[in-house]
Length: 369
Ligand code: NAD
Ligand code: WQD
Image 1: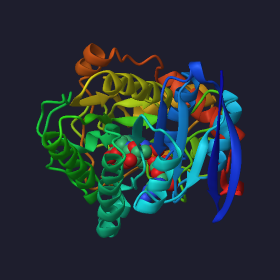
Image 2: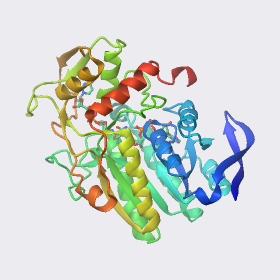
Image 3: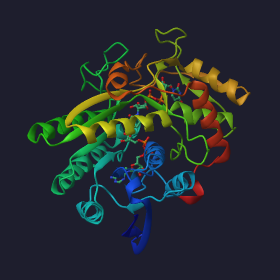
Image 4: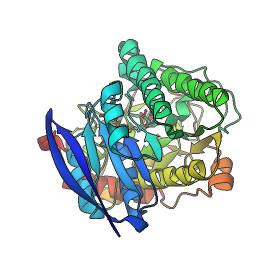
């Protein structure tokens, strides 16, 4: 039996009805609403979901992404995404989505993620991230959909801890409003679960996601000058920026630069599928670190990238960046034991795939934004 459905799309406020082919209905495992599906991690997770025969619905206001990423996801997978343009703080758009689709679970990526911006505009961050999540949960509750995977961050761990971080360690003593939005949302989700045992929630604390899909069709596309290391390094490699500033060589680490746990975005995407399987099969609320469990210094990272691009990455040593911790990497035992999660890709592959994406799309999705 084939599975078709009429869906109303909102594209730049024009409504169009489209007949969507989902494939054979017996093939479909579950229908997943992905908030922020057009974004970096969301789009890569959509690929994994579609490849695993889930039906994917995305809602995104494209404040930090392009609709083009979802077109590319469809190119990669040969499958359709049902996509809505809208803000998760708008209850009407969410009600419309839940009315028009029989959703089994939500993977919630939508949010603002710049640490720097959050210091300048804390209210915008609390409104978008916290109020957006509350609104989403309200509507989920209204439609009796109580399965949720939430994008949290390693940034919620207390800033005075020693790596590796495990999920039992204290959280909340964070250094930015962005981090605090993630901490507050985690607490809200715990309260929600306490109030109603039917909720099944997985909180995923990502470490440093990097890399791109190996097709080079989708990848990370930050607006303006990137704050994060990988997009900056890859733009230096392509000559878009003349040099990288390494934020200090005075840390108490093996080469004086900060150590981070980089994880390939496709490994991270796979982690979401494992978390999804878990919440769909049993009720509970669990937190999982998603990292590789290994730490690389900034200089080791540059060295790995230079080997892949076969040219020098120019860099200068600069001042410490406020809020940077010397060493951050994950204890991945819990995700391995309870989800069966293990990274496949190493730092070489992270660099190869980033460079491929950057070379094929030197301006990202810019001409389509
Ligand atoms: P991203 O900015 O690429 O993706 C977020 C998406 O959400 C974007 O497409 C954006 O347009 C959309 N969005 C934002 N606010 C929205 C709203 N109110 N309504 C609808 N759509 C909205 O970021 P990403 O790197 O893919 O991160 C995804 C999630 O993972 C975020 O919640 C982020 O905080 C979290 N996270 C990211 C990292 C990282 O380093 N990338 C690390 C830890 C946690
Ligand atoms: C990595 C290392 C910098 C840029 C951030 C958020 C965190 C999470 C992941 C969302 C650090 C150094 C960087 C540069 C540099 N995001 N660096 N020169 O800070 O570990 O984590 O992204 O939840 O919340 O804070 O990642 O990529 O910015 O930095 O030397 O131009 O590279 O000092 O040691 P970070 P990053």
